[in-house]
Image 1 (cartoon, rainbow, N blue to C red):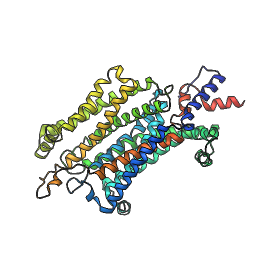
Image 2: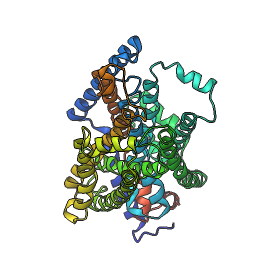
Image 3: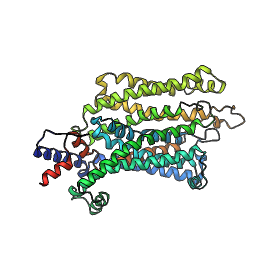
Image 4: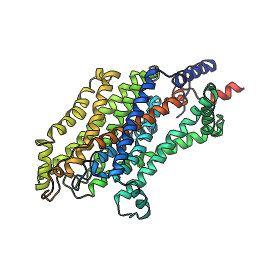
Length: 454
């Protein structure tokens, strides 16, 4: 799409310099709060690594996983990471292809969340295996009939495409860091030089980058849908009441888009406040994201009704026991809390414009994200404990599941790991794509450089 600016060449140059200063300022300064934040994340990761060492040394017996509850918090965490990774395709691809230009300042936030989340989704699966050497056997003795193999393939492919989708639009920003951050240590300047791939902003380079971004925008959408659909098939092809559903694929995809949108809103709020980017991440962006969240809440509500109404109407024996546990039994308080606080209330509140302001929307997004993680938990744990054949002649603790401190520490470390990668990225690279934002204002950097050189 062509953009035209009414600004003069000098005004365009001034606007470009203003934005360069704004996006590079967080890279040049470091506050005590950012250092404390990084220290906190590293501490949580360190505790998680120690817990994982205990698990490697003693086996999965240090967890609450048993013969019946063989999937627990680890798999819940895996589905959650896969879910929030879809935010990259939603914000950067779908909105880009449909010409919703307001999304430019938040594309990079969505893309780094997607890359870091899918990276730890792969790692948490290795943790759940117990013995990490089993990943080797998966590749050596794979069977194409296995949905687990399908999941490994789409996760690896989606990570690769998401990384490229982050990297190609980042090239002009890396070159900007290389040229302007001359006060940085030698190793950092060398890193920028290597990663910039010789970028000098000529016509051929711009043409290649924009073409690659357009191709990836189209390619990442079916990959994003397929990764969560295949993850849903892992459950739907397993014989358990509550999972025997052809609705699981779109059900998972709809929930993933909602969770990813919540994470992007939280990222917008944090970076806007911490890096003083109020001029670029405005109340207008929060208003649009709030409207998008309402739409996704309604879509997800439809799939939730569809998912539970049919088995509730039939009330087969095994399904009946599972649904009674969710609706009125031991899991009812968690189930209804998720439905009300994590989905129904956000949809109702966000219909009102005051709740689409930055602070209330951030609070709502936080509950949506927490609800999204807990939703994955109740998809996994209660169903594992409600098999078709009754549980009998086993120790009493096999009939229940609650994660041990080892599982909680490892899960916390994985969440901290995602936040650490996002934080580290924002300390080395601009969190806003300045060339895309300026292009949205009608300032084409390639054209501007050409006119300046004449």
